[in-house]
Image (cartoon, rainbow, N blue to C red):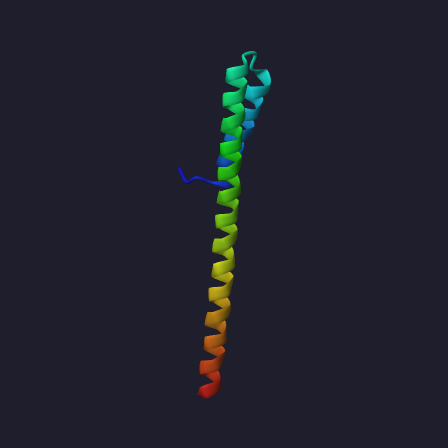
Amino acid sequence: MAATFEFYDARANEAAAAAKEATLDNVRERNLRAEKTWRALANQSRKAAHDREKLEREKAARREAETQAEAGEG
């Protein structure tokens, strides 16, 4: 399974819910730490996807510019 924002976000939401329902302080704190970690992973995943999309757009623009330059030479 590919790690996606949606996957990480769902785990963070589960950890938050578990923390809210916890009656023991150590269990609540553990789940809050887990939520924080899952949220960080979700944000990292979203940023990586955004960066990949940006890179692909830049590559496509470069290829288009090269194609137009070659067409102008011929």
